[in-house]
Image (tube, rainbow, N blue to C red; front, side, top):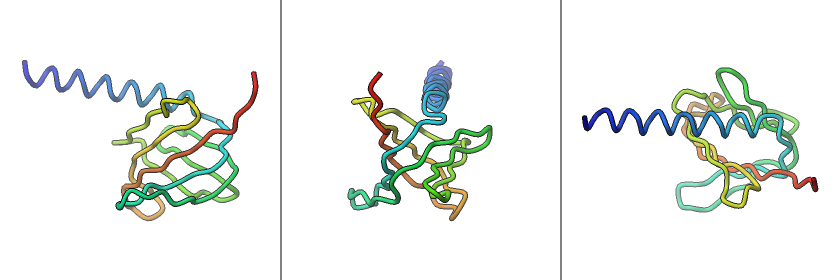
Length: 108
């Protein structure tokens, strides 16, 4: 019974990540930051878009700056709704990274 709860919680987490990925597909981004180990954020690029593919998520700002594998990925929107935090293994260098993308604000 203990393991069922954990599996159900893991499935809920996966479902939340999937819904977040659907919402952020083709989203225009203002800038992308990477969270360093010491807690600081380093700006990687400005301007671009997010592309969600079946096996990875790409943050493109002229060139691909982050290509995260969907397997084991954690993604959540910021509480303000103005961006997304993604933690995944980067295909470009093989390291697990936490990347924050801030959306371009469009008045609706």
